[in-house]
Length: 327
Image 1 (cartoon, rainbow, N blue to C red):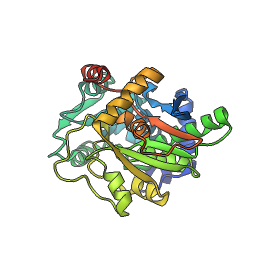
Image 2 (tube, rainbow, N blue to C red):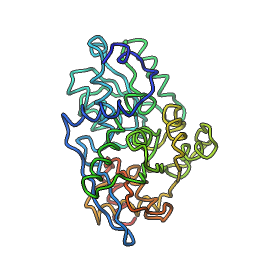
Image 3 (spheres, one colour):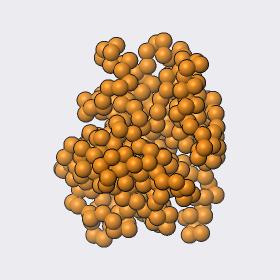
Image 4 (cartoon, rainbow, N blue to C red):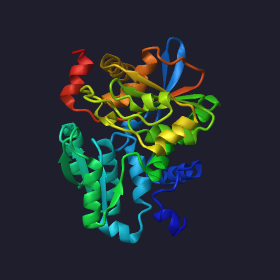
């Protein structure tokens, strides 16, 4: 690896980068399970990223990015922004590597995510999600302290790190079925997991799923250009997917692959969470259940080798209990 690679934040993510990230992650973490789920006589395969040590796939990008910091960068630390899952991924990696971490989180982030991030040793700064600019806050901190900004999706290392999930899916499906996935349905906020999975599975159809009213990737793919979330978007329990605008680095990959964008309703998300609990015995947060929700709602024709992501399981206890109980 060259110094130029380490210092070039504008490079493009690649399959080789995904493979390199996967090797780094495999050295410290076991692969998460790929679980079968029968739906109307067809088996789909569910990637249980909710079982990661931080409860979400974001640990992958955090580890890939922070392990590529130079010695000088490690001294000055990192600053990230997130509603909670990326926050925990960066904080987990930072604690393991001895790197100072500051995380900018929305004031309305789930208490569980705030508490977990703080417990991992990160300094937390909160902001108003709808009126504040987390990017500007991070830039200001970086300028003052020299900390490296670690975006939640707009970064080649993050895309490659998240792509290691897609690479595991491909390897696991080959081992379990003898075939690669021909369709991967991915929960989508900024598109890091979806675009990384697209790199890792060049032959598979990619479908991204977002909550209604926050489906900017869906709208962007349909229009062929980046479209931000509209004014006054609805409240959503899918806090992990509340991205106001996607980035060229993720959008361009998905556009080039002719990815399909879909959206799901709160009721469809709740149903998916109940099915994941009843059939797979997994706790899945609302944002982590949208891919399954689209499948269960019949919005995606099933193929012989469909895989989906259950991308996170960090949900406040009271909200989860109410949803599972059908309230």
